[in-house]
Length: 292
Image 1 (cartoon, rainbow, N blue to C red):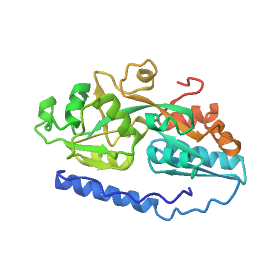
Image 2 (cartoon, rainbow, N blue to C red):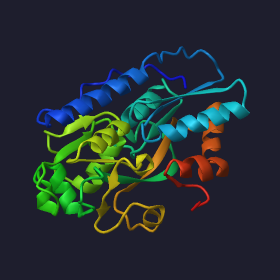
Image 3 (cartoon, rainbow, N blue to C red):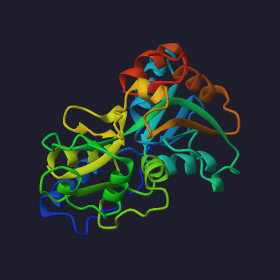
Image 4 (cartoon, rainbow, N blue to C red):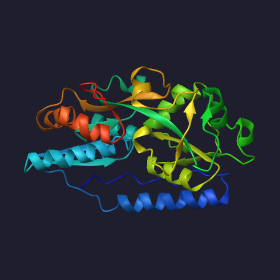
């Protein structure tokens, strides 16, 4: 994959995290920064499409881009994941052709003239380490945990073990959705570790027994344990019937109506072929054809 030069990653904010958690976070950050290097690209070709934004949508956008280029020789789709806010900013400024976002537009962004194309449904999963015996939490308990009001797992039926909060950065669409649905007007605990990538959150939780975080359902693997919320686990069925509370739409945005290559690529992502394979295999819920 070829991509745009990413913005410099800010050092994760981990003021009061346990030392082992700090080490894991720093290692994860270094891996992400090194993988993003060497991505400068001069956009000079008319047959080149630039797609940037959400790290949640990155797997769909990248694989679809490769498949699109295979069936359309000479047309290149360059994809990068810099966060949902960056996707919206770059498409609004014209520096990218398609902005990807795992959050809705904020009120201030609704006047930017962006066309919203939903491409999939998603659920946000609250994750803990597999060695953590806590398998279910209420929405109120999750809010209290991420607000710092509950700081030991014994307070929610678990072991006498400090809770290690792992949060996302403010540019994250996943954080915005979690904040809106779960936190409401309650502020996040400012001592939580703050990370720029979904993969980093999963890695830290997988390697820290007391950690808790939240990631897109499409990024869940057997390295972490998903917690039921109010008795409901995130599944395709629980999302489609509206039982699981932490769900959202994934978006493509264009400045005005998509044209030419952008329209062709978006139509490709919305095709039955991509929706029933790439979208579904990535752990997301197809928006076209109600594939189950």
